[in-house]
Image (cartoon, rainbow, N blue to C red; front, top):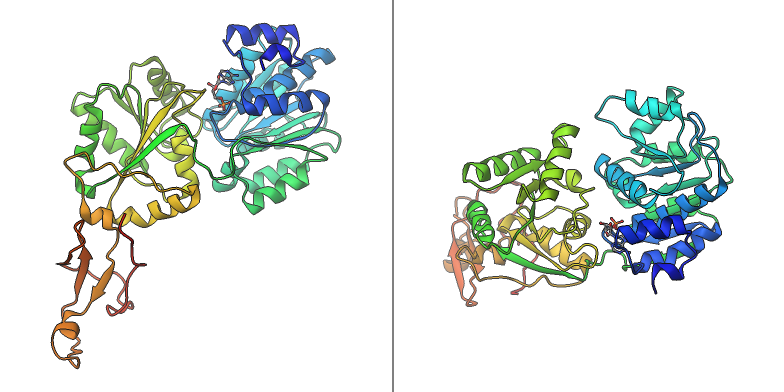
Length: 444
Ligand code: AMP
């Protein structure tokens, strides 16, 4: 199938041609015809599947064909997304796809002055692309009313839930007119998301392009077991490969991101950092530099990386294992976009092993281990201590239950031998040393 097989108007067909979109992606092929017909849509698709164009094309087309004027402070279409980066990305897609239409849109998000946003709304736009918090602020101040709304899109609904935006989303939903067309998109469908979808949609069509919680198939994934203290050196090694041209590195905290990108710059690497603590201007500049290739390595936290839409990310490195499996899916979805293939490498230390297990359970596969590096850590691969025994009890008399007995942990090495290791201080004094501290890990 090609785009000209779909009932898309010439104004949009020609824009798609200039964007070099020839074949609709599965979500586009499944969503565009019913949306043009006016049906509601539930799309289960992760980022990188072309989901933005899947709703942007029909909405732009319908507004353009209706010939409606843009009303002051009363948009007829609203697209809600969880982050400002994603809002900007959707807005860029609308601009590119709608360049030959008469549809006007604007963006609304926090962290920047509201004046230009108010000016655009007051001048009149058809479509608003917004994060929930700032939109509610502007509604409260009377600069935006949803009473004339005809099209509503909720993008990345599961991420809204993760980020604690659900109360704001519910408030917005309560302001929507009953007569409208709705699109609901989410990469995963946990029960609260299913519930919200069922309240929003009427006789909808469902398009599922990836089963929930499945990792992007085109991403070649690997895990490198490494002691925490060696992660920085392992990153140097990963970056020493010139094939790794555009590398997105995920860390858990803002401070971690700052520390890492500054130390890379000190070592002469073209690196930058992006996280919620940096100004919107700084984040946009960094993204542009990463897009243009001026920066080779971008260090990011999960939230900041959410809206990154850069096609040629060659590698995603999880410097820290994410605490949630869903974040892993989103992270590695940053590579292998728009049909390209990509690679993700996860650095896992002993204390992160349990999160890795959870991820593997969620994505339904074992992530292949890469041992071809000098920092491979058997301790990390074995995960948390598998067995902790009191050797006074096990080696000496069975009655030797002395309180001062020094407990010893036993760990299985790669060869399968059991060896003794010094115990870490017991962080949980109520936990008995006679028990296993974590489920027995299986050899991989
Ligand atoms: P999205 O999932 O909407 O974030 O889109 C991911 C990337 O795919 C974006 O860079 C789009 O510009 C690109 N894209 C979307 N649809 C197509 C298509 N049919 N052909 C080629 N690229 C596309």
